[in-house]
Length: 550
Image (cartoon, rainbow, N blue to C red; front, side):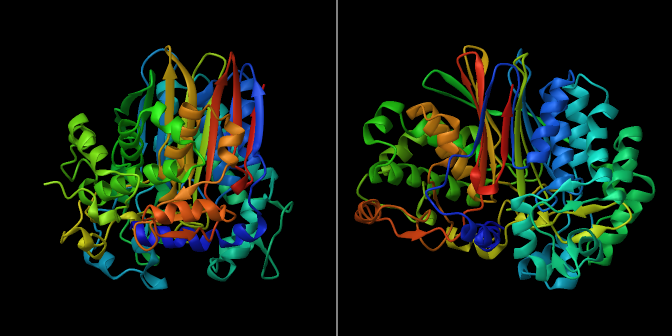
């Protein structure tokens, strides 16, 4: 549900906003000839780099990083969640693995019309976890080392312990009153107080689960006693997840969306992601020459891009759902004729509210890896909000997602003249996501890879940073650290990060924008880019990530 997800992002990032002063300092950055990694977790970044130094490729490193992030950054991701991966193997066009969570067969759609749900019904928001089967399929298709080799580092990390980072510590402090689950209390609280930065946390239950997964593969989680415990935990919290749902889950291979922009081939996520369509539509609306003439810091530039983003949000609300359950004609939505008409409707001196477009007639973790062979992975994984549904399968240490909250309620599409959404809850459906893993090729090799976290801000962030790099040549460390703007689905038309110059605000308002200040600073983008024959990697300082290269 776009509106509630955005509201949660605002609340969840409030603590971080107090800890960071804008303009933000440059994010962690690195330059290397052979390998590059950027993630939201120092622990995950180091694990990925070590995997490639030990002979693994970018896929091996991405799988290791995702699993390590689930150990050391469990507010954002883990085995109880899901995500998307976009891969360029250095030879063929990029390809996608969709391991987004699905709705259980016993879902009660009517319950989703009365959100927010009471605490004892939060299990209704738990989708069938897809992460493990997705990572396994990713490794099966393109990994170079053994499955045990790529899983064991995460198991060892959970067993030996990891140091709590700044983002995890902040989220624990922010959400402390809601984290009453005994397993979370035992792991992350000492005498009722959340642990701070630098504390060492061990998770023996999750270590044992990862050991089984290393030996048995996905069957360790989707069948047998771990599966039974996951189902019991979800059902005890009012959910509908069943053993049959777990057994039936399958990750899907999809064709990425593709657009040529100023000679570069941009590949990004197709539905059930809405982020990829936003990026493609925006790139088709404006040429680089016009945007450079306006200037990236100008009100005119930011207004034009905001108009494009609002139009894409309107298309998301009207047309996007799980392609298996809704007729999603992306080719028509991004067609040249349609984008030409949209371009004519956008002017420098007026602004559309989101519902006025298309009347023709935020706990997530992103990571990027690159290796010496030219393979690149852009992967986003999530349990949705902080610790997902805040339901833990205690014996296995698995935190379960609340991803079904991304289904859209009928009230949210009423402003668009609709009685029901194509993204409504249905058995087996995958809720629409904002996740936008993206890879750009030039001359047959990857030159840019990025993606982000932050709920509905992901797609707007990624779109702005793709333009920043491809149009203005901004290097990754500057791009991820620069101020961004956000386009909410209701209320103010634009939200600027704290510290925006008053002249910019005045200029935007003269163009009809209703401008507000973003009350949080907790969304992040991870990026790697070619610099000659080297990789330049950067991690967004907003979530204290780390980039490394050699």
